[in-house]
Length: 319
Ligand code: F6P
Image (cartoon, rainbow, N blue to C red; front, side, top):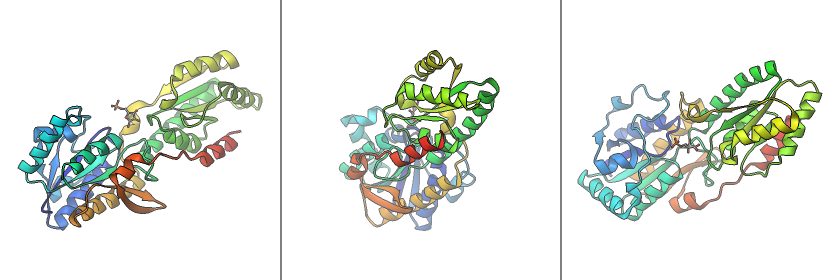
């Protein structure tokens, strides 16, 4: 393995830059050339590449986003797109790839692996929605952002005696809502993994009011449905003014937490080591605080287990 390619694809996640830094520096330490590919699979198809030096990744460990830029690429999902990519990889003399992203990105990586290109993937998505790993890079930073917002919204919720729904990202996964809801002291947490009963939420709003609570924060995962409809129903059934804040892409940016930087540094290093050992079709992850690597098929097919115990703790703590 003399030349390693590196790309970030799909939704960006804080910590991607720290992982890029780790991959670049570990490659150079091991006398391998490292080629940065811009804009994910898009840039691969367009041959947008440049060799990276130690200095290319200076001053990025603390920055959100991805210096390699990212994109979602439909052409790469087609057979023609894949064969074009395989051809470009061979023309540029790339011997293996480190690929950063979420499950859609991993599916693309699997196709490259099947086409004979050694690949190792690093899970980077704020959603924390990949079942084979305890953690995906970017998640804790997104949760910190959501908790910060919940704290601010609680101030105004109290001043006005309102209920406030804070909608967070996560696609079909409720982890951002669960973690930020618990850490932010939300009164209700609504996630797609657990059927929710609007009357139960309303009961909590009324009980809180009766106990003299002025605020009521509802952490709601985007995968649940329309936050405005939920707000309307709460308002109708409880008589409590209810407002909605959709946090949106603010959760995708910002300086990565220490935990994300450390995870990214470890996984970036391990990804290069695996390629240099001749491994391919592997996905990095973490289980019980240890870095693991599993087959890409396992990574793509392991169903995510929702932490129902934590959810139940949240219910008890918010009475
Ligand atoms: O997968 C990360 C994520 O931020 C999800 O939480 C969200 O549903 C989606 O991406 C938004 O995608 P886009 O940035 O393409 O609008």
